[in-house]
Image 1 (cartoon, rainbow, N blue to C red):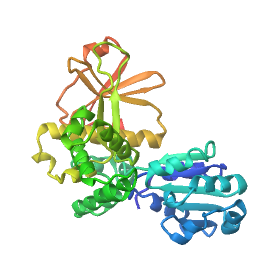
Image 2: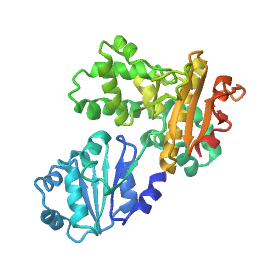
Image 3: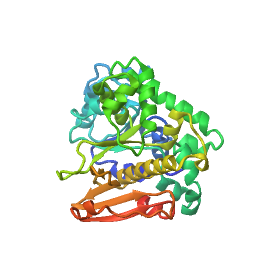
Image 4: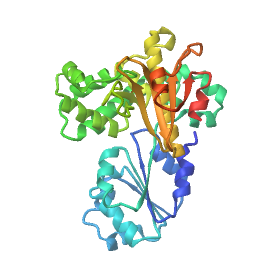
Length: 374
């Protein structure tokens, strides 16, 4: 069993009279985390939202009927909660009327669950995100040397738990995972009927990691309008498949406004969408650089979320095509980073940026990646 960062975080949040909400994509280990935390504890009332009889107990529920169902249990664990109608209102009934019961909830379709719980549970919840395994979790599980040896493998196959623990079956597992993303979660929302357009969009995004993207150009390539492209990207982001970075600007004339880059939370999913599992050594230098940038920034997102490192993040580019891959601003201080797969490659802060902003600067490569991710 690979220990997860969220285990200690959730344990520390228990019994504080707030619901604990764990959201994230399918197959990242949410149910396994619950089993690790509570196992066969007899004080836990387990509810699986995939089961019809469990869902039925929430239909027209009252505080009295919920109290009767929960009985003397101290914990209520609801897995796949997005399947339950009016889940937010029902959770509010439990929290307000059975205050000694700790509620823990998971959901895979994060945006639907979030929409159902945000208003009813205002001030009544701790909310956490769970991701595929992280560099930091794997270092803790094995050691730093071993994980750095596996960087080339992780850049191709990613960190989904099933992928990590089933060496030799990575391609088949990733194919199933990417199909589940596309056809089970996303297509069931917002009346998306033309799955081939969504697949084409994902393929286009996968080919453009590390590069600026234009919704108009994407729409022209796929055959849909830019507003539909943006709507699809919003859904993909809310399902934790991709995330966006916007350009940093303090209104200098030569800085780009409203530019964006899009990255995948997992390199394995990106490569699965393209059906390309070629070894790093067989890829063009430009693609290796893009994979390394995607890997490093995605892992940084996980690290920041688990460490509660609250910051703003961007990339920077000006009209002269000078660029910095990644910026963070925390407590008014800016940190800037460039990503180079080849440790011998050098980089420096563009003068136009350095003259306007006070910032630390680091070049992140495989030799020092632990400084960025641990």
